[in-house]
Length: 227
Image (tube, rainbow, N blue to C red; front, side, top):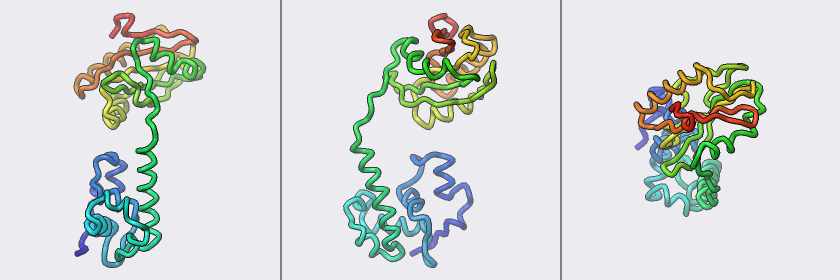
């Protein structure tokens, strides 16, 4: 019944490495469960144990209802692994039961600037960030893409869109600060914006605006017809 040894799988196919590289959403139920179990037995790998456990109880949902003693009765599981599985399932239940915090809407450049102004106006070097938006223009995440020097911050499209794709963002608002306090865009700012906009068109994620933060003032590329 047990055949798959995780250590014998190509490195790129091992559940833990795949989760790190591709994200947890790309893994099957048995792969996620195998990561929780961590180790197998002399006869079965963690992946085999996970597959058997799901099959034994008739699906991943049934594990929620199973008592630790029922899980540990399955050969190769034991009380320690049963406790790990139950703890993870309980965490998932609590997350699902937690009310989702109100996500801010971006209706105009002022809304985006307001979200970041007090933090970014005081930074002593350039931080390039992205506000990731859903289809309703709600902010689903804010990510720091790069940290630069006093007057520049190198940004590669790969770093920007990696997070946006992972979070299924529909659009992005670029945000970066000028430690000098003057938000006037530089030629480099304009070049970077154009390059990222072109990359966004390729991957299907629109760059809605680029906000440059100064000392309690900002400039919007969109408002200035620069985008």
